[in-house]
Length: 337
Image (cartoon, rainbow, N blue to C red):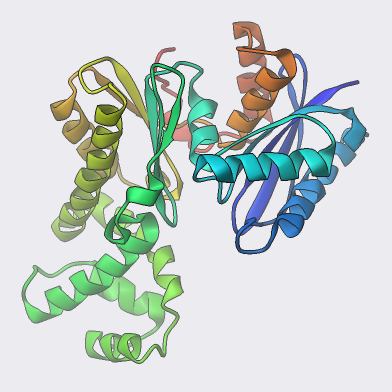
């Protein structure tokens, strides 16, 4: 029996999903992360093979049963990156593959229609565009570090707490939560240890979710902070529409990534307002499915030689749910359904 393989590889983990040619996802496996620039292609491919073997093992399949691969891989930022990764994946698995940026598989998990975009906010930030002419545009290289996802929110929160302690900003719930997060007694100690690098600076990215919780509780400082980020992120999506001839036409914009799993709708609602002010024909929704689902869809298109049928897509989405590949239970309302 022949299968297709979807791959989603980041720096910390690799996810593989096996589906039959009718679109039914049969199993999911995982392994460590990889990045062909940082860890080398051999290591990255090895983690892909480990994740695929785990998924195949659950159904008694073999690597030779894979007909095609669809991968959203770390480091697939520019066309030559995708080509190098495609070559590496095809060498490792001895079958045809299509390789795109990981934000593109997140987009393809949600839609098979062009004129669509996705804003992916996890540790970092990326914006992917599927233009009306079928071309794909990935904007991550253009995005200022000031707005790069959870890490940027966490760092900005640190200085918001400092400003609150000075009286530049109002008091905020974030102060005590950040002190508890680092186990410190007061803001002065926090500032001193941050400057001297005596606390884990990288850990600050994990604090971003707390900002959402505080905003949900009605903290006005948190709400304004998230609105600032939403407006900046919307600006990149608006630029993506403009440079791809979509600004005055109907378009769908999806959101994905851990930051949008936060306990508040402040980000999503602020994004909607900004995007729809620029283009009233934009429809905005949070993503339903994990990005790996998009990898499966790309693999099916590769194996079957073109756009897959509605029946196959229905099988993909139904089996994604039974395999635990829903990213957000609140996001069942989908654009276009």
